[in-house]
Image 1 (cartoon, helix red, strand yellow):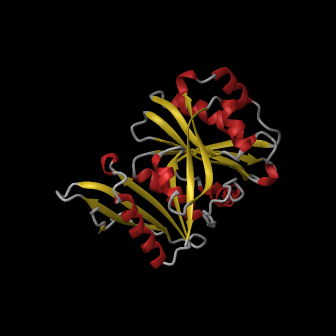
Image 2 (cartoon, one colour):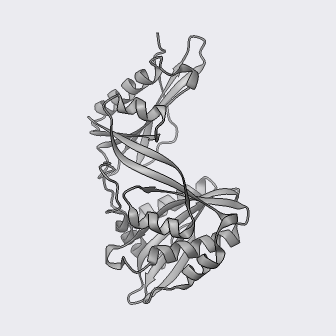
Image 3 (cartoon, one colour):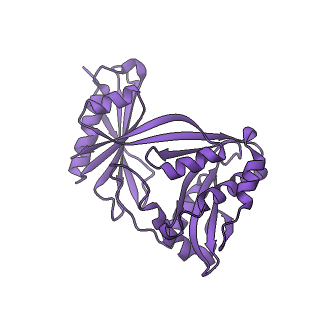
Length: 293
């Protein structure tokens, strides 16, 4: 008989999310699988949960994952959630597992990587030098400067219409406190958040931004967190300009970084076009599945 999942206590709850965790062990007490259910507690996402199930390859197809799933979905229902999201690599056993259990595929993501040693520096320099008329670039590490805080928080609505296909990620309002909390969370784990923002010179407001997290050791791969341009400022090349400048600066400041990674919805053609032009190469795909409760 497959092992019964044992609930665990997660010590890392935050103001916006909390996790329920289960551990499955075999007859000898060895771990064979885990499930983690992330519950969102912010307005606009209280209906949502994210599920991650891991089962040791040797223990698969023996009912371990199914029992972990039953425990997690039951807890989501009990907590009043309406949607459970889970991700799996494309064409993987995880994708087959979810598809066979009433999850429906709602989003396909393409992951891409820029090898910094292979970056086309002259092309990036040219792209960074093509400053769109009426804009200037602002950059900072960590928390946004006070003078830009309110405008930067307001600019986060640029992500509201980002193509997410049928995935139900809810919608959360951004304010200065939340923007600063994200930067502080990155700093607490020892990483560096670098932000570049396009500033509208007419009124000094933030028209777009791109964020990159550099690992604490300042080596390995940096990770793009998000790039957004407000609707009224699109079509002027801001995203490519900001990202090109950011790549050059990070490459110069952190020479031990080997690459930069990003993920983009397959349906987000404009951002994929920008990444392709800057030299990012697709590495793999991931699919998001959703279970409606």
